[in-house]
Length: 114
Length: 114
Image (tube, rainbow over the protein chains, first blue to last red):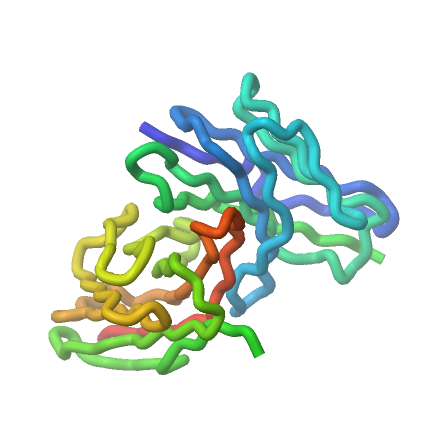
């Protein structure tokens, strides 16, 4: 069956360091993968999308990589700040005849300590 | 302001009393979706709609109904709510067919079924 795993339930880092979050998947052939940020009690907010034919995408301090051979995406926040503390979710579209059917990982709670 | 709105934001009801949670978006998005979020289970898709009059089941459709009669609205109907439907519900929309896939989430509806 299709499965998405975000390896770390929680990640604690010091301010200024790079946070690296992992999203692994099995039995998917996704056309794209998305990353979202969610603050407590609020809806997720879209951050980045990377397509299957892209290796890397950047946006300001954020970087996403996508390795379809390893079936893995890495999400990096460089020069992290306490304001980056939140839950980060990856999401995949099932593709094919189930295009539009989205599955989210369980999320990684990132805490950046001053 | 471009947004997804949900009503009500909070609802406490009793088992078996039919209820509707409304969702509306003002961005002319083709795609809309409902999710529920539970501790330990993450964000799970209930139903999604690729366009007017087109709806499909997500991962957890049991006990829910949806309709998409107009592009902007996508109500979630619980015909006979049960306590296991106590959850935080999110509606989302996306300009999926315009080549852009990010989802815009509403503020959430916290439902308690006693």
